[in-house]
Length: 590
Image 1 (cartoon, rainbow, N blue to C red):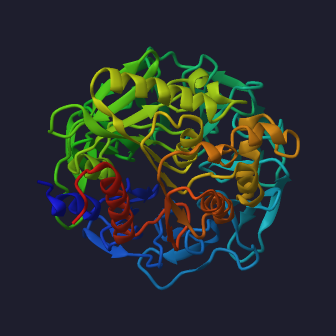
Image 2 (image 1 turned 180 degrees about the vertical axis):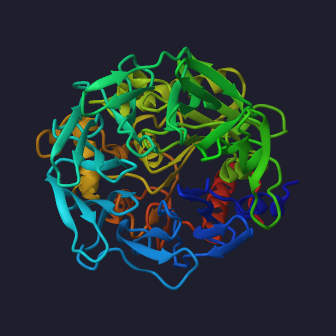
Image 3 (image 1 turned 30 degrees about the horizontal axis):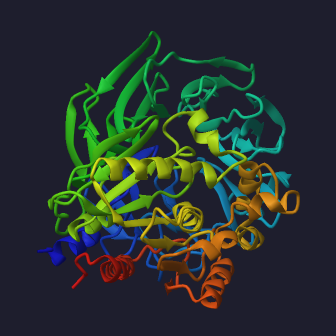
């Protein structure tokens, strides 16, 4: 019998993001939490352990940060998830929020870097990207503008230099880096050439130190390098690790904090630079979603695994494991089932199974992105599906991050079809091993996973018994016309052309092209304000399903690319579980 209260408690259990702190006031922090029933920002005075809810918007707030002095919190204000907004500023101890600039109109966010005396804002409006310097009491000053994408990468500790990413070479998926002074004058450029991306992880936090920490992919796997933009000198530490890494500075500039990701699980390391030495820090097996080193040498990180809700934990300066740093008030989530690893050739997948014997009714839960990947991390939707008797399969198809540049870029020029080939290979394996009941297999996913769901229902109709697509691309040509402008450049790079340049390439990879072949019922969940997978192209697909007389249902919700409200997420999960139960005979939600 299903414990109906348990799966809802997992959604409602309070969680937080990794806090950010003022560099010069590390006892003042800001974080996001769902403890109010939706994700909002909170200010935390650590010495007094006082927590103040900062934002309270209808659809919630996730994006915010704090200035180095710990005096002001900045947060991004869009309209009900449409992602078109402006930065607001509020004193740490309250007093109301005001726009950071009364001059700059709403735009898509391209980054925010806050210094001790200035702030720098990246913006995208229409087909123009710009960078502006803000100084209190003065009008914003534009120091960069271009039609190709650009986004911020860090401000030096003395507020003199700015690093940003750009795609002036025409490929937004593989950025170059540029450092300028705050008048926009060039200091240094770094580009590894076609097909090789660079990611800034910011300047050293030491005043006067102009080194920039960068992630490169020259040898396939992501690795750190240290760049001195005035001289062009780079240093590339040697890391003998099997997976991709992320990196950030220790505040003293003498070491780099490394988060190593391999096959959906994480490790934490301190990379000392002089002499070069890699030291593993004690963490439990699972996923480290974010990590940062504090001024006193402590490392804080957000950890979870499939069985355990996320926690913010610490490692002490001497390398000993610390305890839980931040735990919001409220009941903890019931534990979940563990994931097992499944390899089909080079394709890595996770499988979560219910206690009942095999074969199971099974759902393929396909991740979005496509530049993302499934991890051994706590997921209320996965656990709710397992609770109701389904095995859950998560596939890190070609295009996923975490497995190197070649794996991530394997779908370039051929998106959709590449991923479906990998999903099909995993489908064959779970059927042949007796994990999945071949007559009861659901294809499901959100965002890019929703796109792959609708495309898979049309191109692989013999494999699937049911489809559930959340905020999908359904009609790619119409989606391109309506989507937020930064995504157009991403699609150009992913497909190798725009729809005007090569319309057939998009048509051949658009779910609506193959809608006649859809043979099974499909449920579509759509956000009315979604700028990434806009509503018109979903309506086009639904109208075509109506005209063809094909079985389908739709749930619309008044938000953007997903909801930050807990009860809305539970409502959507109930609709999915009910839809699956009516067609597959699994346990319905009560």
